[in-house]
Amino acid sequence: MFWYDHDLSGWGWFAMSASMIVFWALIISLGVLLFRALARAGDTKTPTGTRGADPEKLLAERFARGEIDEEEYDRRLTVLRGCAGDRARLTKS
Image (cartoon, rainbow, N blue to C red; front, side, top):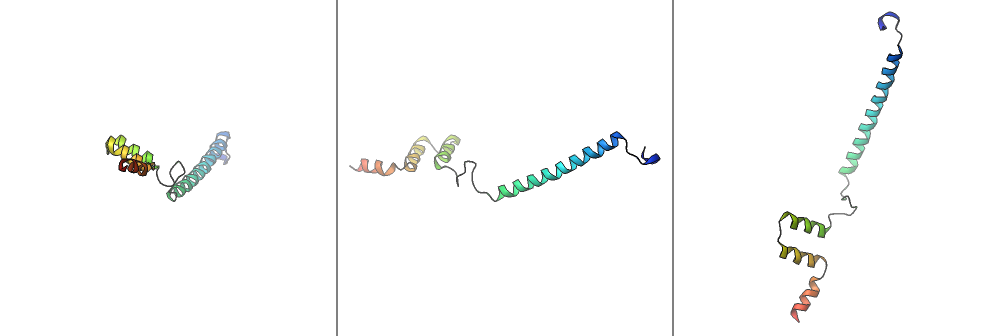
C-alpha cells in the first residue's frame, strides 16, 4: 500500500477523516467539560436558584432522617412560618 506508491486508498481517506472528526470532538468536549466544572465550582446557588437551602425543606429532610422527633419538627416549623409569636401571645392570655 503506502510503501509502493504513497497514495491513500478510499479507506485511508475515510480513516483520516474520521480520526480528525473524533480528535476535534474530543478537544471540544474536554473544553466544554472544563468550562462547566470551573463554572460550577464558583457557583454557590442551589438547583432551585436560591442561595442556601429552603429552611422548611431542610427541616423536613432532618425529620425524615430521624434526627428530630415530630414534636420538635412541629415546633420548629411553627417558628419558621412566623406563627410562634402568635402562639406565645395566645398561651399568655
